Length: 392
Ligand code: GLY
Image 1 (cartoon, protein in one colour):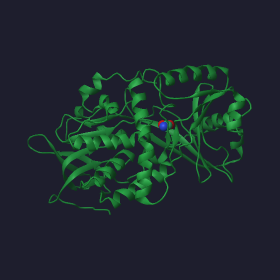
Image 2: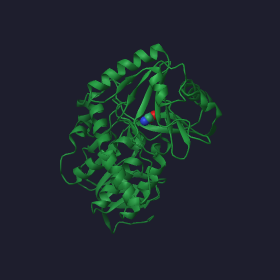
Image 3: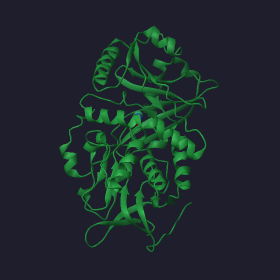
């Protein structure tokens, strides 16, 4: 259902600015819980999560100095099997959730030393892994290059088909009665007392709501109507990603690799496509596909799996991750009454969508959010107080 002009006569329980994976997961769960929900986005489901690889990787996304974030990622991963089953039940079709683990490999001996240090840190935060020598890696993934110098089995890092996921969430939202307005939100509306009362779109539509959620990814700071200092700091972090395709699946499950110090991943899909990613570039909101980035990704991927040379290169795309100063998200009420934020999930939006949706339900019910998410509140004060990372 697409509603274009709601006017001011009806007040929804919740108005959500942003129909990315976070906004959609929240809308679905809130709608299922009996709330009236409206989502405003000119192109819902087509943000960073559409471009992504869909890895659910609490271990491989845990980095030195980010212990609190690592615990959040593990808590996020624990929600996934149930979330996937509920969504598949609701829409009656699969979303490509594959709880098949990940093999992580090192290209040369210095990559191996770096990987060993990372695995030790990851084990210290509770992310399981088991070291493998090169031939054990190749027994699991025969297409791996004979030149790799070893790796590890990471049993808790899985994947979901990101495009089936967001399409499924859109359907599930509509089935749960969520309304969509295909317009860009430009401002939060406030009452005289300074509490949020709704959203205003570029086309002049005003949506009145009891609570407002901003889930606009890297665009979060761009909403008017409130002082800019209300918004936590979120910036675009560019990522190139490729899709390849062949007559047969070239690898049976996800591989992550370190290639001369650079990270690379290869994620096979049931439809025989292979997702290869991703660059991490501080280029502002630049969405150009650049030849050098495509070249680097292909070069690194073929160092791990030389057979990709035979595949068709079917897509080169760019996504803008919502990055934050400490790589952790912001989920909670802002200093404006009735205005919440859920943004800045950086490399982990898909992984953290279920726990974020759960937290937003709790906020609206005046219940505490899951403990692992509690340090990642949305007010500038909580952002200054948290020490979850040193950047990467
Ligand atoms: N989650 C992987 C990436 O952002 O590239």
